Amino acid sequence: MQNSALPLADITVVSIEQAIAAPLATRHLADWGARVIKIERPGTGDFARGYDTAMDGLSSQFVWTNRSKESLALDIKDEQGQETLESLLARADVFIQNLAPGAAKRQGLDAKSLVARFPRLVACDISGYGSGGPYSDKKAYDLLVQCETGFLSINGTPETPSKCGLAIADIATGMYTLNGILMGLHQRARTGCGMAFEVSLFDAMTEWMSYPAYYTRGRGEPVPRSGARHATIAPYGPFATGDGKTVFFGVQNEREWQSFCSVALGDAAIATDARYVTNSLRVANRDALERVITERFAAWTSDEVLARLDRAAIANAKMNDVEALLDHPQLVERQRYRSVETERGAMDMFMPAVTIAGVEPVMGPVPAVGQHTGAILAELAELAAERETVQRSEA
Image (cartoon, rainbow, N blue to C red; front, top):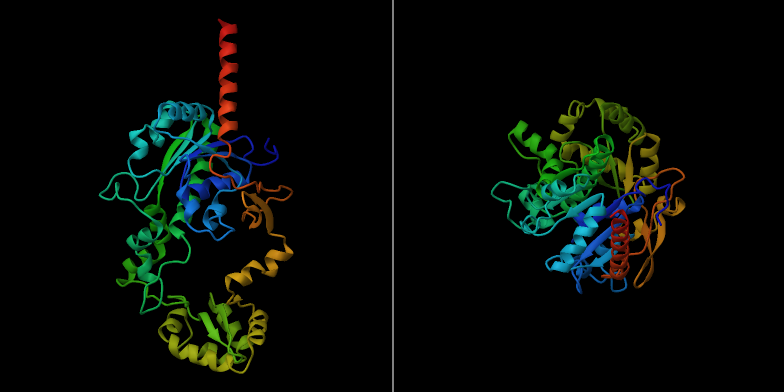
C-alpha cells in the first residue's frame, strides 16, 4: 500500500521499458508514490541489467533507474501475455513504451492506439527520432544521437571532439517524458480525457542544442570547442593556483567582473583595461586575460584563491572527482542518501532532486527479473473473479 501523502499515490504506471530513458521517467514517478509495473522479457529482462556488474554483480545503470518498481516477466507476443497486458492497461493511468521502431504500432501498443481504446490513459511513445521523417525507422542510442544532433562538434577540446560522460540524450528524453506525463495527468484531471504523446531522443537533444544552434545561425560560425572553458563567456573555467591545484570560477556580468578584479585579484584597474571592459572583448582577448589571472593566482594556494573569490561573491568550485562527490559534505550533512534493497543486499543511493517538506520519497527495492509476476497475475485473477461475480449478481 502506497503512502497516501505522496503526490502520485493514486497513479498506476505500466511500462514496457528498457535501457535508460523510459526507466528513468518511471523511476521518478515511483519516487513520489506511483505504482510502476515494469514489463520485462522472461528470463533476461531489461538488457540494461547487463550493462555492467559494478554493484556487487548488478548493473549500476539499472540500479539507478529501477528502484521502487514491480517486475512482471511477460511475453507480450503470445496470447496469454497480450490478455494480461490488456487487463493491466484497463486499470492503468499511465503507459510508456520504448520498443524498437515500429514494434509497438504493429502490436497496437502505440500511444495513439491505446488512448483510442482507453480514453483516460496517458500514453507515451519514446523513440530515437520520432514519427515521420527519413530517420523514423532508424535505431538510436545515446552516443549516436549526441553525434547526429551536433553535440560532439561543440564538446571537447579544440583538437578532439568528445562524447558526454553521461547518457545525456537518454536523461533529457526521460525528463521530457516525465514532463509530458504530468501534463497529461493534469489535463485528465481537468477534462476527464487522457493524452497520447511522443518524445524522441533526437528532439530532446535538439532542444538542448538550442543555444549553440541559434549562436551558429546568428554568427554564421559554430560555437568553438573550448575544453573546460566556457566558449562564449570569459573568464569562466579552470585556473591554476600557486600550490599546483586548479580552481574553477565564472564571471557572469559586469558587476561581478568589477568585483572580481578589485577583490579577488586586488587590482581594480584591470576591470577598466580597454581589452577587457565587456564580455565580448574578454572572450576575444581570452589568452591575455588568462595570463593576467594565472600570474596573480600563482601567489596564492587554491584555498586562498577560493576564499578571495568567495569574498568577491564570485561563484567557484573545486575540481572534484566522483569519489569526492560520494563523500561531499553537502550530501553527507543533508543526509541525501537512503539505503535501498536489491537482490544483492542493501545499497546507498542518492535521493531524488525534488525536496518536498514533510514528505519522504519512496526508496523501494530494485526488483529481480519477474520478481512480482506471481503476485500481479494473482491480483488480476482475483479482480477478474470479483468482476464475474458482480456480473452474475446483476444478471
